[in-house]
Each structure stands twice: as structure tokens, then as C-alpha cells.
Length: 124
Image (cartoon, rainbow, N blue to C red):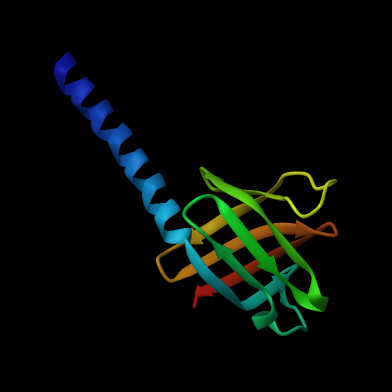
């Protein structure tokens, strides 16, 4: 009976590792926002201005409205996307929640100015 338990635990661990590897593979690429909600309401801006790019070496770039840009390092830890802008010497690590990650779509939840935002992105 103990052997079955060890086999089950081993299978469970392999499944978790495989899922994390799939997420790391899925996030690589160029993403553009198609919809942005703030406090559950559509934001009045062109979502296409918000773009992310993630590579397979842990680097990202981000472009937003009014010409804002970031570049830096990122990692996925569970349902969190952690990033640190290396263009700014005062930047701190940020965490946003990954609500959904598929090969062609990504949904992020974050706080901006104390308000919940949900960003829906598709892969270019």
C-alpha cells in the first residue's frame, strides 16, 4: 500500500512540474490587450496600446498608454507573475495575478491606484 502512495505522490509532483513548465512556455511571445476592466467597468482607452513581450530567458518588455515603457526580468510563481523593471533604479518587484494563461490568451489581475484592474490579452 505504501508503494501506491509513493507512486501517487510522484505522479502528482510530476504533474505540477509539467503544468508550471507549460505556463512558462505559454507566456513566451508578444501579447496585446483587447479589453481592460477597472472596478468591473470598461476603461475608456485603446487597449491595443498595452503590450507585453516575454522571452524564454526571463526578460520582458511592457508598453502602455501615454508612452510608458518598462523592461526587466520576470518569473512565474504559482498564479503570480513577478516582474522587476531594470530601466529604473528605484523600481521594486511587482506581482500580478495570472487568472488565465493559454497558448493564445492571457488574463491578468492587478491593483492600480487602489483599484482592481483585469487585463485581457491575446498573443500576436
